Image (cartoon, helix red, strand yellow):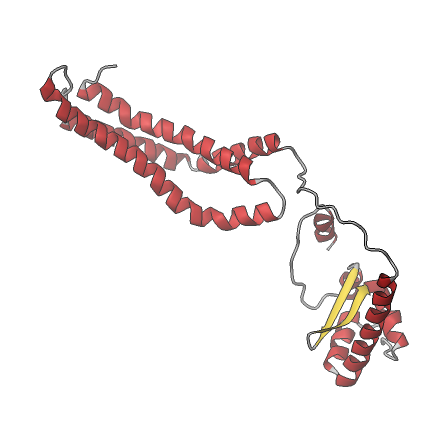
Length: 246
């Protein structure tokens, strides 16, 4: 609970469920909200709940878990009625007090982050690169596949490049396959990765971990580096086997 409280105080939204908390865990919470039939039965500090209920004639038994006592009261119609009546009385007092206080001017500020956007971009680039290269066998298999595809195209159009009109059509076929292969790699990678990472990116962005522009730039940069390497593995065999010239 202490860890969750520290995370919440740092600006991170924490939502969790603790079933049947002990007395020690229950008292560690700062605020308590009790609902009865969809209405607020109590809302305030946890440490003040016992005294507030005692004023309503609800005495908490000694040596008994407060969470279990409150849940038992909420299930009892008579006790729940007293709690709802007390909560309504407190709400009326709060509204009357609020009417006498001028509402402060609210200034909407832009979302602040713990680090600069440049630092966010560096960290996200490192994370994305590590995520893409965490499986060396996968990266090696992709490079080998590109080399094999380039060698296959080069064998089919072996030394077809030239300076005559007849060599234009074969060279166009080899170049089309190379360009189409590289383009489809990018399109398929984006189409397959977006549904997988969307939930993670949405959660991290809403928690205020980073802004979207640094994440987008880092993702594009890493993918460009990897796709450049894969395209070279595909293009070099084609270039030398087909006999292309600069």
